[in-house]
Image 1 (cartoon, rainbow, N blue to C red):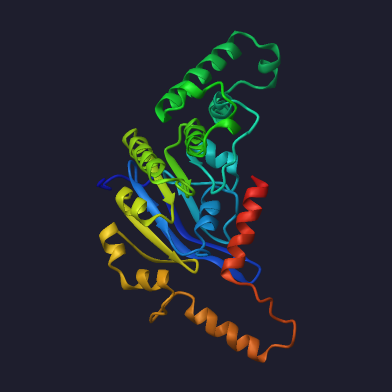
Image 2 (spheres, rainbow, N blue to C red):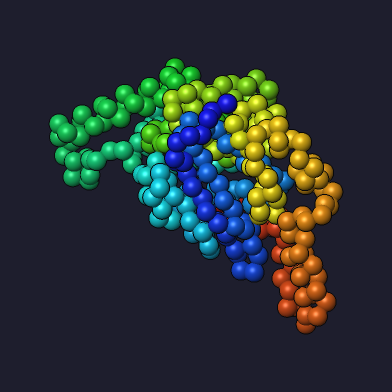
Length: 302
C-alpha cells in the first residue's frame, strides 16, 4: 500500500452536479495523492461517471471545486488535460481508421508547442518536435505491449489491446493523474489481470490513478483506498478491508434499505410533493435515467 504524506494531486471539494431538479452528484469530497491508486465504486446510476465528468471539465459542477496540485481547474477538458489530468472512457473511443501509433500521437497535442505555420512549413523545429513525439509514443507502446502493432489500424486490434491503446493515448499527455472509467469492462480474466499489472506499472512510474470499476475483485486487489458512491453521495471511504466490511455498502449493492441511507429524505420529499402536486407537475426522472442521459451526452460530446 502507498502512504499519503504528500500534498494531493487531486482535491475535489463539495462537488455537486444537478440536472434541472435532479441531483446526480451531491457534495462529494475526494483527494488523490501522488503514487496512489484510488477506486470509485457504487451501484449503477450512483453518479460515478458524472463525477468523473466534473473532474475532467466535461461538466461544470453546479457547486464545489476541483483542484490539481492546489490550483483550481477551469471547466474545459483541454485545459484540464494540459494541467496534468488524463482519462479514458467507458466505451472505447479510438480513431478507428488511424494506426496505433497515430492514436497515441494524438494524445501528445497538449505537450507540443508547434503551431499552424510550423506544421505547414515543416521547418527544423517542427521536425525535431515530430521526432520527439514519435519517440515518446513508441516508448508508451512498448510500455503497454503494443509496439509490434504500431502500424496496425486501431480497429483491427483485439478488444483487450484496444483498451490498452486508450490507456497509452491517455499517458501520452504525461499526466500526473490518470482517470480510468471501467478499464476492464468486457474483459476475460486474463485480460483483467494484465490490466491490473499495467495499472500497477503506471503507479510505479509516479502517476496517481483514480479508477471506476464494477469488478470488485479487481478493485480490492488494486486500490490503496476505495470510495463508495450511492445515489450521488459518498457513502464511505477507506481501505479495501474497511469498505468490504461496511454494512451500508453491502446493503447498497444488495438493494436492502438501511437507516440513514443517502437519498431517503429526498425520496420522501418527492413522494410528498407528488401527493400534493397537480397533474404534470412532476417529471418522474430517476437517478438511473439521469446517469444514462449524462453518459450518452458525454460520449456524444467527446
